Image (cartoon, rainbow over all chains, first blue to last red; front, side):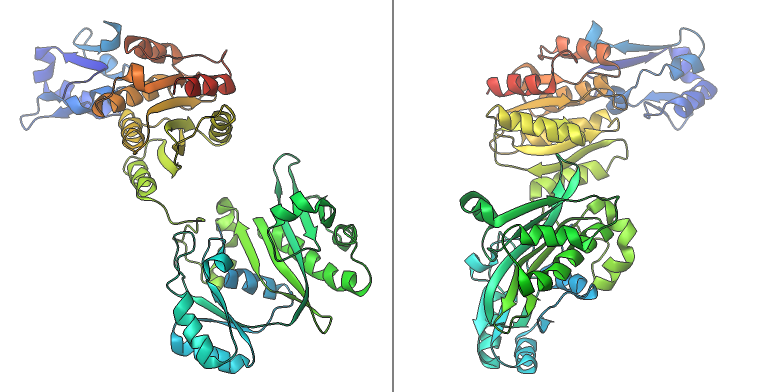
Amino acid sequence: MPGLFIDVKVAAEAAKDTEIAKKLVEVCAVDIFAQNDDGSLRVVEENLDECVLCDLCIDAAPKGTVEVIKLYES
Amino acid sequence: MRFYEYESKALFRRHGMPLGEGQIVNSTAEARAAAEAIGGPIVVKSQVLSGGRMKAGAVQFADTPDEAAAKYDFVLPIEVGGETARSVLVEAKSPVAHEYFVSVTWDGRRKLPVLLFSDMGGIDIEEVAETHPEHLSRTHFSTILPLSERIAKEAISSVGVSGGDLNRLVPIVYRLMQVFLQYDLTLAEINPVAKLEDGSFIVLDGHVDMEAEARGDHKKLLAELGIGEDETRQARPPTEFELEGARLNAVDHRGVAGNVVEFDGNLGLIIGAGGGSLTLFDAVRKHGGKPANYCEIGGNPSVGKACNLTKLILGKPGVEKIAVMMNVVSNTRVDIVARGVIKGCLEAGKDPSKVITIFRIPGAWEDEGFKILEKYGVEYCDRSVSMYEAAGRAVAKL
């Protein structure tokens, strides 16, 4: 189920990168990211609304590859 | 945390208060044996935490062991305030000449313990206070200065007790004050203290409530009294609604959202925490509102936790609307609570703009929270609106 309040978009290239995926899983305190069996990134939709807007994921990934969207601002 | 009568008496006995002969029993045979051992007239008393035993018929008198056994079978299944007996106390029936009331409790306004004494014991003290105020004394005392028998003496004598009765009552009342302070009690009450026909005094019934937060400081006493660490000892057993709230709170370690107490009103409350909850609950009532629940929310609960609490409260039969109110928060994020509450409304199939009467949580991340509330058309206010006024707005929408 997608988030009501928050959406997170990750650039396709970054999502495929297992190192970036590992970092994102590590930094997110509310488990929005997980790794698939092949090491690629998966966004855990049911946890999206728990996002605390800490921006750690944005800082952990190459610039511009992770976007946190506040759906209530649109 | 409330003590059963037999536990209260065990505590009193340790402090040298005069008590009649008695035994706690758990079977008909034990009741008969206890009555035989005591000899003479007997009182058979159900051990429940609720008040109103006498009116419910859960206190009976017997003249013989066989009668005591029959009375045991009679009182055991009786429900008092929805509670059945844990066990039964079989005591000697004392020949009473006069009854007194003594209680020590906490006066929140004065921030001091208060000793209440009346020479009209055995009946509701509220009734005495209303109809015979001159027979009830209220004496505050310090938790810092040394305790003195003089305080007890003044309290007793101020309702006209003098002479030998005064001298015999003073040590009982003084020891009750000591017990209150020593064990962090919120209530220590004896009703009645009886003067017997031979002029001696005896504790006939007693109640003790210990501050729940103080349990850790009195583990030894509680263990000696046989009170288990898992016994919550609330005045009544938790309802399904309350158990579900506790379960929701326990499954997620983040913050607190789920400690609820059930009431029968129509306004669900998502309020917190501590003094703020009490203030808001009282404010709702002051405005004529009827709360459906008390609750505590704080410490930055997750969105999911706030969502589940909202759904629980909205699902309670009779709840028409909810009010979301807190004091100014620093350790709880406004936007996270806003998300959780709105999500809870939507998942419960309700329109947040219609079902949330007011959202008054000022503090950390409030600008972000207010954006969310605006998006969903929920009425909100900041700290310029008092908790009292916010409660009034909530009640006005019902």
